[in-house]
Image 1: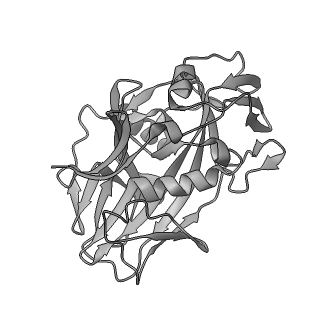
Image 2: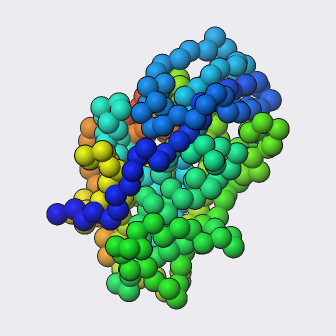
Length: 295
């Protein structure tokens, strides 16, 4: 049986719609209008269009962040993906760790990205659960009322090299240079941060779990299911993803099936500043990797 870790009130969440200006040189976003609650934001996440994917001004429903997280286990590097049933789109995909940026963090989306790692990626060892740090900052331990976090050791989260093109919030350039794209089907701006998670040297028998929130009786409920970890690893070879997929249970990679699997739009083709697809099949994504490697 899944274990309930926390219940939250969704009405506490507020975000802001955006005005986005894109050009071949860079992208700038700023808030527009009044704060929106979760339901109002979802109402605005409807398809939009642009004439020129390299240069446009557009109003969007929200800002989202994702983390392309790399982790190393027993000498092998992996990308971390999580499974999500997207209720607003009626599908199930593997995606990057991601979340909506609240109004008060619109100019500091890195904070949202860090918090999403703490909330969605749970690392269990025989001695307890691992908390983490980003530089000098402790990540939140959102489930410390339900889980026993280790005090003596922790993982470290760090930013990797960013995109070549700058992204600005108003007049401020985001220093980590996340990859940015406008997702036309949901009228949203997405920022993708490239990060690495380094484990303590003494880590053993590591298990990885994904925790995501779902709406139940008007509350956001976060559950942990040991029978369905929902966190997946894609092995890297010389920094490039391969066609394999695993979960990690007590230190052992367990092969996962990929038949009929879909990935979220962040893995689909990006045309300048825009992504037009809702999702991409695992098979098609692997084909694009092969083409890129041969080119």
